Amino acid sequence: MYNLLKGKRGIIFGALDERSIAWKVAERATEEGANIVLTNAPVALRLGTVKSLAEKTGATLIPADATAVEDLEQLVDQSLEILGGKIDFVLHSIGMSVNVRKGRHYTEQKYEFTKTGWDVSALSFHKLMSVLYKKDAMNAWGSIVALTYMAAQRVFPDYNDMADNKAYLESIARSFGYFFGRDKKVRVNTISQSPTVTTAGSGVKGFDGFISFAEKMSPLGNATALECADYTISLFSDLTRKVTLQNLFHDGGFSNMGVSTALMDTFMKEEE
Ligand SMILES: NC(=O)c1ccc[n+]([C@@H]2O[C@H](COP(=O)([O-])OP(=O)(O)OC[C@H]3O[C@@H](n4cnc5c(N)ncnc54)[C@H](O)[C@@H]3O)[C@@H](O)[C@H]2O)c1
Image (tube, rainbow, N blue to C red; front, top):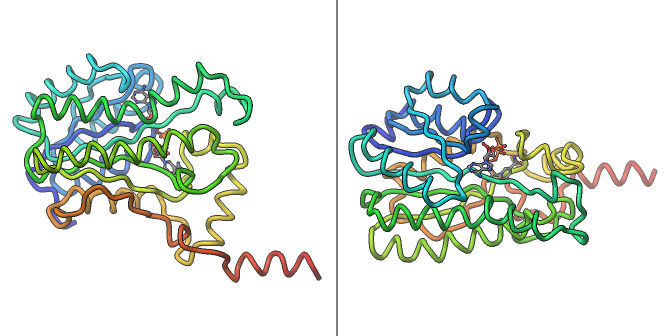
């Protein structure tokens, strides 16, 4: 380990179980010397195994629904107190589509579901940053990261309304990131991660086929949750102070590929 986050204080959203990307980030952040607060929706804290992660990392666990501004305000106030000073890094690792969960096709969305999914997956990022900004809760040269997926730029039919939510999320990172940079010297970025086997990921229809497709397409193969955590740590560290307003692809090269020989081979075989 490199002590990259020695003495830094952070808040990590979205660790549900051992597969969660946020879980790996929490483990890696504490290994690198950070003190953290873990948070998730109250229902997730009841269902999940996150208590064991809190014990392992010495973190305090604070329930907060990321769509409720009052919850976020309490979370930030308590975190400042518990951690003993301003925050250096925040991870938004939250996503949920009710349309996906209920099996509604993209062309047949129930718009009440769409609104809820948008609030949870995208607007919550604005709400979180607004609370941090107004409370002046971030240290200068702090770092805020949200996780996203390439369906924000390109068509992945079964990603459903999450594609639109991710496009909105990435736009919030740029728009709010401007004010956070100008006024507080805080950077804001999104990491666009490979498909990863987690509760949220596996909810997408045809996920297994898709993960194999991406693996074959990417010159370095799919990035794992742990590798995503490592990349996130680099963005929380002092080594990336001037990186902001970016959507950073962490996907083994997938996003710049047209076709790979591994995939071509599959089709050539079919032709034989
Ligand atoms: N798994 C993938 O293939 C993949 C790929 C790219 C990006 N991502 C993104 O990574 C992030 C983390 O997802 P994951 O794959 O680790 O899955 P996950 O299911 O482990 O994490 C999603 C988290 O969102 C939390 N959440 C849902 N509603 C909430 C609310 N109202 N308030 C607070 N928290 C709430 C859940 O409790 C859960 O902990 C998401 O933004 C997801 O879209 C995932």
